[in-house]
Amino acid sequence: MKDIILSRQENEKTILVGLITASQNEVKANEYLDELAFLAETAGAEPVKKFLQKIDQPNSVTFVGVGKLAEIKQYIDENEIELAIFDDDLSPKQLKNIENELQIKVLDRTTLILDIFAARAQTATAKTQVELAQYQYLLPRLTRLWTHLERQKGGIGMRGPGETQIETDRRIILDKISRLKNQLKDIDKQKSVQRKNRGKMVRVALVGYTNVGKSTLMNLLSKSEVFAENKLFATLDTTVRKVIVDNLPFLMADTVGFIRKLPTHLVESFKSTLDEVREADLLVHIVDISHPTFEDQIEVVNKTLNEVCGAEHKPVLLVFNKIDAYRHVPKDEDDLSPIKKENISLDELKQTYMSKLNDNCIFISAKNKENIDALKDKLYEMVKEIHIQRFPYNDFLFQKYDEESAEEQDV
Image 1 (cartoon, rainbow, N blue to C red):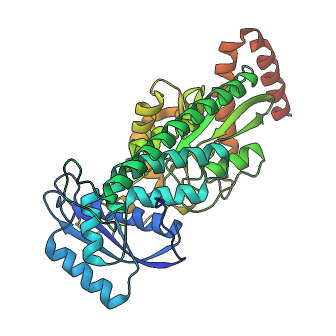
Image 2: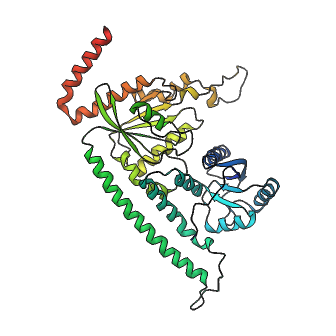
Image 3: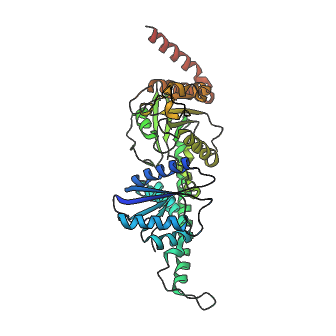
């Protein structure tokens, strides 16, 4: 049986294909393709060209129009392209027709993400979650994988070996999906026991879009060495560390990053990982303020947290990271064109809607360790408030400690 993750060489020359539709304008379509290019680079491919087509809705047969597909085919033949990646999920029918026309390997966004997840998974938990997502994705696409077998007209007594093998594979995959789900249930129980054994310490979860610096900040605050890299989905496994700010200990969890167009079944497969978010007392939402569409990323994370984790009522500290990478391009006085985001300085940006967040918003650079002390102070205040609600008799100890700290600062 063919595995969903296709073998690939490093630095395969790749083209990217997306659509401009009524629900996705040209600006957004280009943003999605830029993100797809980053995904492709993370997987080891080399994006060399992007193709965009304006169309009311995806073509049910070839995703893009026949003319655009012919244009793509010509470019592939002239430039020895090895791989085509489409920005949306392709149906089995579309995938088969596109492969027949282009005569190269074709992936969609979900397959690419699964490939990255499979390469990044380190622990048994992550590997089980990825395998489950792979089989759930593969199940409706079995027909395409068996087109090389002899097939006969349907009807009683007329089934060819192709259909027989498909039915056999379907049963095998359904059995594996059931087995993997049971394994994840056992993992959930183990994780639940582990969380109970941690006692009643306050739990803080780092959440955010992928590649915003969660692991870097985790290493900084916990003085640990969680794997961090400037690639998408560098972290798949939830890592929990004990952090002490002044005299206050709490637990901090580094969670998997989110991304736009993340398949629902993939999120469901990582349910046990997201349980750390569900049981957290405080969420620290990390945002890459240097990214041109960071507001969209905030919206994606909030939507996922609310839908999957039920975290809409948890206290949240919004941390804008990578202020060192923020680029300000001043606008000329005689330039009458509309103001763009890059024309707004960081100080001006702080005076927008962010000013209404009051103390629940802070700006840092985890890479350059800029404003980290202010972040620690804010974390201390928020965690202390939760701790005192849980252990009221400790309020006196905090008051005494704070008074002594104030006296030391005066001296």
